[in-house]
Length: 444
Image (spheres, rainbow, N blue to C red):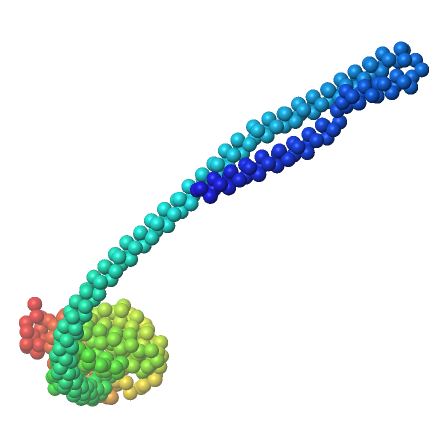
């Protein structure tokens, strides 16, 4: 601060000295210009001596002298006045300048003092922070040491648990491998059992699909095989069945008269089949027959359309379609289908028998009896042929011949004992004593 005051004082001194020098320089020419009285008198005496008319010119010269003196005095006064004004202005400005310089010096001093204080405060803060950091560092180091000790203890405990866990894993792995091997062996045995069951089902159903019925012995075998398959499926949920297996399962369930389950199996095959046309056709064919047995005839016809689209030349499928039309009373349409089947396979006795029955419904009796006799020529033990002939004789009011043929039909197929009791085509025989004795149950 003292240094700033000294600088301000020095500046004021320099300015004052400069103004004094300036005034000295200005005043010097003014002092040289005024004319002294002696010089004026000498000049006037010379003029009087040289003038031929001293009295006349004396007044003029005096006037001129006075005039010159007055002008000199005025000029000197004006000059002095100007200088005084300038000096007064300078004297007025100097305190202002000094004040400004003092103010600036004061501000500078304040700024330096503030900077010094800030610097001192910063040093104190840094010292305090360093002390706190040092204390915190020591605290953290102590905590880290404690944590290190705890971590070491935990690590040892974890290592011990890991060893125990690894031992358990090894034991479980050994047990799992043993169980897996057992499951593999079981799965292999399950697959083998499945293959044996389907081979036996195939050997029975393939020779019976054209007849849709089995002997009592074959039925018992099918029932046993389906029970074994059900048991196998219940024990092994992961039993792998392919498309052919589902078709064969459907066939077995069909002959076991489990038609809803058969349809479900056929649907499984249908859903899985992509390019296997043969199995897809077999599945639709089996579904058609199952729906017919459930008397869902419109659905059965729709299924037959799917099957015939895959194999339009299959005689059994055409026969199935004709039978669906037949049992729905569409006799003319059924006759056309049967005609096509017989044209392709003249020895198809079932088609000839059904054609004969349709001809009876159409009242074409001579053609009908001829067709029924032809079916029996092709297969003499065909009970359906005798059942058709019994209906033919009943239509011709010959109940004894009708009962004779019905008795032969029941002799080949015992199921007719039950069927004939609800078949309205034979309603006129229900009160006949011989009929009642034949079927074994009185018909109301």
